[in-house]
Length: 438
Image (cartoon, rainbow, N blue to C red):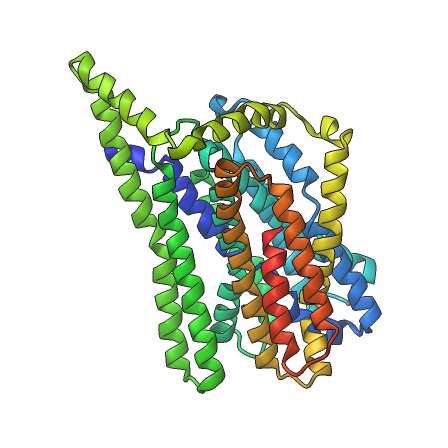
């Protein structure tokens, strides 16, 4: 009986979400921008125009949000679910990247710039559908730890670029066009295979944070492992066999969340069986007491948490898109996100061109993308935990942390303008952490 339940739990849904997001290859435009520019005969201005539509697609989440809301209104009816959003994302991902690859290798006639803009828009817009389906489902499965689970999932999405760069180094070294084909096939295949596991489970348990911390530890280990490998690659010339072995080890690390999920589901099953099969009221009272004790916070911190739940959460949950558009808070957040994320995206999109102007090699540019992905992960997962902690213990709102991140990013761009030796590595670290925290 337990084996039947293990395939349909919120823990397995979280693992499936992690694997789907790890395959997206976020922020890897710099890997193939040079071959796209040369094969299509673009100048820098045209490449920037094409990159704009890529960025526009990756930051246009309205359609994904509306579709998710539409297909999950009656979650228990079985007629829809997050899998519909995954299918929409998979279709866009395959069409966008495959047509881009076909254009680069000459399989089809060179398309007009407007059509290429559409290809890049679709490819990046697909990532929004993947992110929406997995992040919102994670929030609904873990409502008491929403900031934590969002930080974890966004962290894995951020580090997906570094993971895909490792695969690029082994399977398509020196062939950015092959990397485009890999982006067309891998995320599409992974999402189609795993999408049925990503479902909404409204039931909540008392110690979800402890289990979620296990996923975060795995993510930190992967990030640290990739950072160490990046340092070693810059010091030594590793043979192909070493790259293959380290890549296999990374895949084993990516598989480890499944063990955490199985253990968590086993503990949940035991707890639920004890709760519903207890023969005395005394055992039921103990179960209720344990649940209450876990949520109590020392030094009056629980009062802060309760007040925030009463004042903030009902207001947020009861607001739809049209209502949000009529509030000043929405537009303040919108302007802040456009200014902050726009400047960050302009840096990562032009790593290849900036690196060439500073005489960086192709390997060094790829290392910059990996470094950006790792530090982007640190910003995503770090602020996810920090926002939950400060909100529940200090009453600090998340927009305050956003303002701090924007101020730090402004400082990073000022440092970038100083044109010091090796400044691109420093900027990659600073801007990516701030970008990931937004």
